[in-house]
Image (cartoon, rainbow, N blue to C red):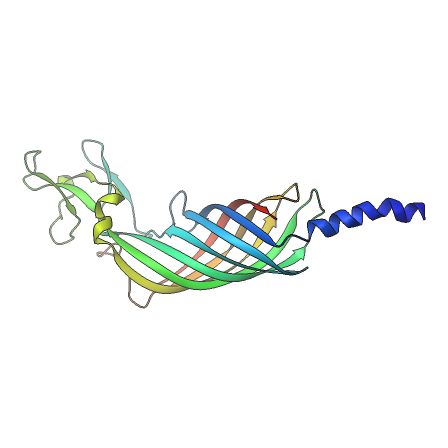
Length: 233
């Protein structure tokens, strides 16, 4: 009887840890199609049963062309030669998460398998450069890159910010799906932290052109890593 009473608090604590109904997480994304930081995401998960959760969320990432290469002009200003557009993707998604190994109430690592699908809202934003039309600084204009006009790299004096071209954004609708594993390290019942690794595939019926002088695709595959934090209740 004494041993049973001693074990009861631990059992109650485990049940309490599994009783949350909603989990909110957010974090940053790294992927093989992005730069140093690929993007960011927000996710809401809901309890279905002791092994399964459903979730919805949104992810915003930048997709870069594999041929992108930064140059420095003679005054030291960087630019990406041949780039015509930035390509950002907003990814609303719905998915399921299966608990493979559950962590202890106050410590340990929980391993989940997950999958999600949803639409992809591609945003092509013109890439603006500072271009000298006479080879000097007397006639420098900030214009969208045009592969038929801006052929002399020595005349490109730098690039402007992404905000310059937002007013000319073109929308490219598509679809995406992903699957992965998450490793949750949350120490306390009310908070979570962890990493998620997986693969993603994305398809656009209309090909997004990032670098017109190189091959552009309408299907993108990538491996990704998410670092996330959050809370539950």
